[in-house]
Structure formats: C-alpha cells, structure tokens
Image 1 (cartoon, protein in one colour):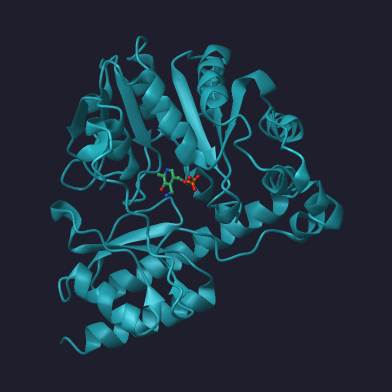
Image 2 (cartoon, helix red, strand yellow):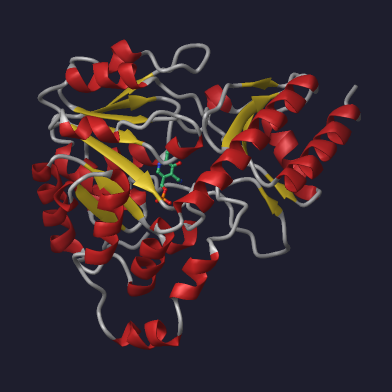
Length: 353
Ligand code: PMP
C-alpha cells in the first residue's frame, strides 16, 4: 500500500476470487463456470469485421442487447440495466442505496461485505439458521438495503417465490436486491415481481447458465427509476462499460436459449447424481438448486480434501471462514468430469477408513 492511498480505503479487505491457475490443466470445479462452451452462433457472430470495428467505441446504450433481453424476458427496455458482470450492478447498487445500512446473511456471496466496507455502509449480518437456511423474518421490515442471493451461495439453497415476495413487500422504503446468478439451475425467478414492486432489483448474469463468464456480462431488472439511478452511476464512471465483442456475443446468445436450457437441465441432472453419490460416501450435502454443491465429510476436513484433490488435478473451492471451514463448494461440471471427481474423492476418503 502506498502512503498516498485514501484513508477511507486503507483498511479495505478486497474480495478474493477463486483460483484461475495457469500451471497446468485442472478439472476446474472451483468458480461455478459452465463446463459447456458458448453455442456456435455466438462463436460465429464475432468475425474479422467485428474485430476491425474495435477501433470504435461500443454502444453505451447496449441497444441491440437490451432489446434482445427485453424480448426474451417479456419486459420493457426501460426496466433493464446492463453491466460488466453482475458484480458491477451489485457495486452500483451498494453505492446508490446503502445510506441506511445493508442487511445480508453471514454465509453468502463474499462480495456483499466488501462493497459494504468499500462504501462505509453499516452492515447488519444475519446468521443463517443451523441448517444454512435463510430465516426470512430476519429480512422483513428493515427498510434499508436488503441483499439476498437466491439460490444462496455457497450453499445452493433457494427460497420460494412467496418467501422472497414477503421480504420485498415488507420493505417498501428500502431496496431489496435479489441476486439470481444461479436461478436458471432450478430456482424460481422474481423478475416478474419487478412490475409489482418499485423497490425490487433482480440481478442476473451470463457467467453461469450462459457459459460466458469471461465476457463479463450481467443484467438487472427493476422499475424505471431504479434503472435511471444505475444509469446515472454508469454514466458517471464508465459509459462504455460493455465492450463491442461482448455486446455482440450477448445478443447472439439470447437467440439460442434452447441450447442453454438444455445445458441447465444436464447440469441439474448431474448435480442430483453427484449429490447422491457424495451422500453414499458419507458426506452431508445441502439440497442445492444451483450449479454447485456444498458438502462436508466427517472423515476429512474441507481444506485437506481441497488440497488432496488439487494434487490430483481437480480444483474445488474451500473457504477459511469459521462456520464453513469443514465444507467445500463443488461446481457441477460435465458428467465425465464429475465421475473423475467422485472416483478421486472415493480414493481419498477410502484411504481414511
Ligand atoms: N452473485 C453471486 C451469488 C455469485 O456467486 C457471483 C459469481 N462470483 C456473482 C454474483 C458475480 O458474477 P459475475 O460478475 O460473473 O456476473
């Protein structure tokens, strides 16, 4: 840290992303990416002409992409905000709506507490119940910024639509963010509720179900005034936040929803298979509605399993925080990858008996 850094930032603990190793090729089950590539029409949409056009700025309004998303979800373009990964919307929303504090669970996406610190927001951190379930009463009648990942990460557990609606309707004077990064793998989306509630911001991403984490593309749905707020911040920081190639790729992807739906189905099936197999190996595994599983074994610690698998060329995620240090988060890869994963876990655990 230099002596010039603002005092406001000196104590900030930055978010630590999952490893993206370069030393060798791993079976990568640590950052919830899709095991499947983007569809052919996305690859074909970016040719020489599009690359030559990189000399021009991108469309700050993301016109084509916004229209495609609007049509796909049956909403108006005025109700959509497009961002550089969904992290950017979350960033803007914390910046915009955190004045009266923020409420989120103790075990959830790690970026929420980083954003709260970054903007000096008073964070009320609600412990999940013993079974890692969100107690919705903790988030009702807050009227500050309420942030819920649904399904939650890293547990994968989802709330029902009626439960989310209770949270939203009981906070008429505070923004409620529902982070739906993983919603396409089996949970119920709250996008439709944005027509009914002017305090709801629903955030989604191309990074998981749409196989485009590297393109950095996220989007949010909300009432027009909320979208205007977010646009104001965007135009005050980085008007060209979505590069030309990502806008093209994102628009093409929308034309191929059937491909993504098929992938989500496959991933959900593989998830259920791996969950059962892990339970057969004695693991405790939560009922995930996401593209990952959250699991612990009595035979081996979370860190030891992570390190043993890494030695064998398989990466999973381990978190050091106290309440979940015995657990691992395992991204659901292809069936073949998961069979290799299970075989290796079996061997590691077998050696422990
Ligand atoms: N929300 C949750 C719950 C996540 O796990 C992630 C992925 N790390 C994000 C948002 C951000 O994803 P992205 O910026 O790639 O859209």
